[in-house]
Length: 329
Image (cartoon, rainbow, N blue to C red):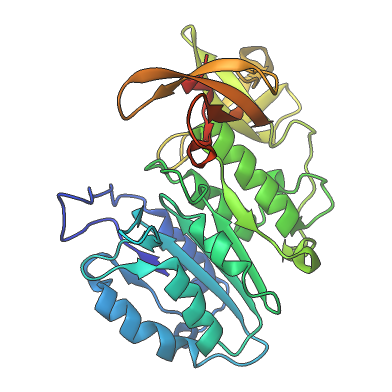
């Protein structure tokens, strides 16, 4: 695990809030569930220079046995370098490309199964690299497609941690286990609804039903896991139901920086989440560009949840992208 929330180059990489950081919580999960300390490497902030990460990574991987499973996680800033390669920003030092990360694992890790997870801009580059190794069980779960930026919230990391913990609202078919298919679907929906961005992932077909967690308690109410709006003084707040009471009350966890806020709410104050804007495939629309604050004519090519994948008029397909409902009309 590499968690970088501050950088020596503060002009190019703005720091993130460290309070309640999710990389610590994910690490604690593995420690509390019996992973020996000699099978854990966790570099964060000033520890995580590119030199330090490189010097530690390969020797750590070489400790593994052939039946071991690798869990890789990065949070921080992602970017594309001058060679157009996706990189993860370490505290200081040279580019650390996703190509190098996956290749280093392939060359040094004795096991056949690895999970590549990342919560940062352009993180989907990991998914593109993981699928190059056809004989390996390499899975990638990433917060956004390789070409897009990601938000500074912990929504992706929270979703990942919920699955590891066996939270039953991730178990969509309520059968007592969370599979990789269920997790990718859950992350995809979370990122689309809450952050307005398209997650990226790669799961080999033979691993789609691989169980992340088992022996999960069944949901006592069909609404558990449902994304909802709750009215407070005339304003709707987005959250999701995590518990239910017989008296018609639901415990709602609200989306925020770390998703820690909860409240018991009467059913009368709850309404199901719906997308504010939806356009059919083929529709002519205008899309707002955050970079130059202008609206551009475009066409909807496909849809997912509240997102629309669009093609800009008079521009090449390399500019096609997923846009949030706030930036389309």
